[in-house]
Image 1 (cartoon, helix red, strand yellow):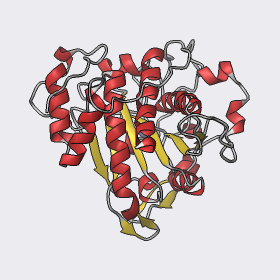
Image 2 (tube, rainbow, N blue to C red; image 1 turned 180 degrees about the vertical axis):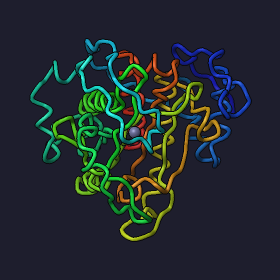
Image 3 (cartoon, rainbow, N blue to C red; image 1 turned 30 degrees about the horizontal axis):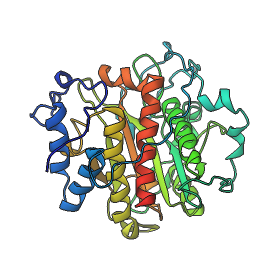
Length: 350
Ligand code: ZN
């Protein structure tokens, strides 16, 4: 097995040397891709990832979707406070709500934020995803920090209880994860709708807080989504960088039974990982997943309670200076949205 695809854009091999408790090997351009594929736990998984990163010349090159226009998003705000906690555990901090940027959708079609509020729009597209339903779950909510009582209440996630929702993390400069996830989610919606999919967001900044994690799962279930992707960015330490996709573990407890979705969710996650890597040049995490870019968890309510294929994508680490350069770039977020969307298309086409 050999990697024959293009070098990822903007890839800096000197920057990926595995600090912070990460695997000791270097993350170089060619070696990382080979290593990435080789470490995926099963032969089938390795093949799938290899296939999506291999590019033209192989039997089935990944689809290249049309890129929506770039937005005029500005630089992140400089006035936020910090919470410094890991994404999944983040809570309590009150990052700035100032809007240093606008989403492309807000400027292009301001009525959209209300349109997806209640139910999926009918599939109007004629692309390859016509008839497919995709739910995008932008992690957290920009308003959560003002509603700590509401989001701190416990909800049952099958094998335990979790906070209803969390504030999420932010960059040191105050660009919040909640703003990041909304921006990427809306860009994904544009890409996927152009492919003919019916797309629903679990929230689009149209509600004061939440939804709770159990409701986020229920939205995907009720929509009978063909695929659900929850978009996040992590809040780990400087030097910890890269992306990872979180897959549902097998959980059967209380209201949770992920048995039917474990396998298709892994397929979805592997395709997203491969396409994301190719689209963004963002290497797999050097601190989670042993270099595979994949992690499996049993403690996330949004996965435990899902009845349809679902993964989380941690796009990068908002506390690492190199990742922050990417996460705060409009152009890079477009690549991120494109890469995740291409993974979804590959899954739904496959
Ligand atoms: Zn998050």
